[in-house]
Image (cartoon, rainbow, N blue to C red; front, side, top):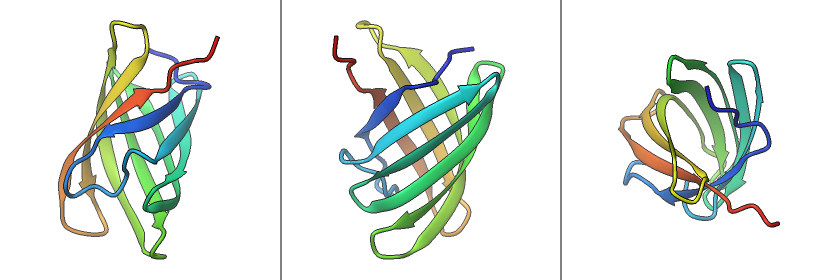
Amino acid sequence: MINLAGVTMFVSDTAATGVVDKETRLDFAQRGERVWARYAGGKVARGWLIGRWIADSLRFRYAQIEQSQTFNAGRSICDVQQLPDGRLRLIEHFVWSTRTGSGINVFDELPRIA
């Protein structure tokens, strides 16, 4: 199980049905198998996710308030990879529960400043 505590990610690729974009930042915390994050930026005014590790995948539910004041929510299953430079990548397979659609988003860890 990878520890996401203190990791900040950006959206490097987004689905046509997604709302997050390259301006969205996700700040993760983790305790044991439980993971949560707050996110904002771009079209998202504020978002939250909460989930846990199950085997080698991260599963979570998310809810967000968009800049348009629209509320949306859904669920995701993420595959986690380590990039050649050591940063983490989450490949999110999401399904909306408040509207029609699903897709794949890619989140990459921001480079850490030494």
